[in-house]
Amino acid sequence: MEPKKNPKADLTKNSSLYFVMGLAAVMLLTYVAFEWKTYDKINEYDTSMNVDDLLDEEVPMTEQIKTPPPPPPPQAPEIIEVVEDEEEVEETIIESTETSQDEEIIEVEDVVVDEIEEDLDVPFSVIEDVPVFPGCENESDKRACFNKMIQKHIAKNFRYPEIAQEMGVQGRVNVMFVIQKDGSIGGVRMRGPDKNLEKEAARIIDKLPKMTPGKQRGRAVRVPFSIPITFKLQ
Image 1 (tube, rainbow, N blue to C red):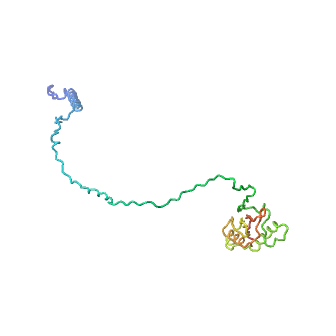
Image 2 (tube, rainbow, N blue to C red; image 1 turned 90 degrees about the vertical axis):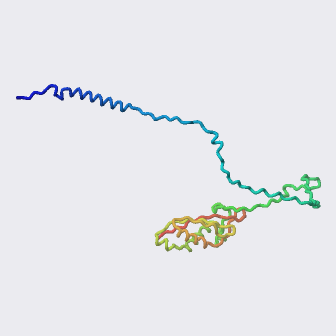
């Protein structure tokens, strides 16, 4: 025999209706909670300023710094001595620059102009009278004799530096020097591949003898001269 349920006792009869009503109530409360606004309480303040209190404020007394009074001005001397100026001032006499008829007029032709000697450098290739190397005084072609004696001097005094031999250094050193107006050698300059070779070339040139200076228009001048010295290992 199956038990029969009383329709009034059925709890699931209107469950869907209750669910919808509860869901609507929850959504309503949620909406109200999001839209709820609160405002700060407005207090009424007295914005009036009591000016009397500010005027009655006591200002504390500060210490006053007393500055010393300025020193009194110096007293003027009671007696003023008057000194007489007895010094005589010489007057400046301005002489006239105008010529008179009694003055002698010198003609321009009678004025002797001293020539100013200038240190001129005349190259060896263009100088009129080349410097004379000792031993070339009686030669007709003193220029060729000069070059020959320079080469002979270099060959006689040539000495290959030992340190350059050990290092295997060789090359050509261009030597430039100036035969001065008194025949001495000066202004020696070198340019080569190694300092040791340049030093040896300078030593050879320093041994050059004093020469007869070169002349241009009958006046002694300085004569620059250059010559290459070749260092070659055998």
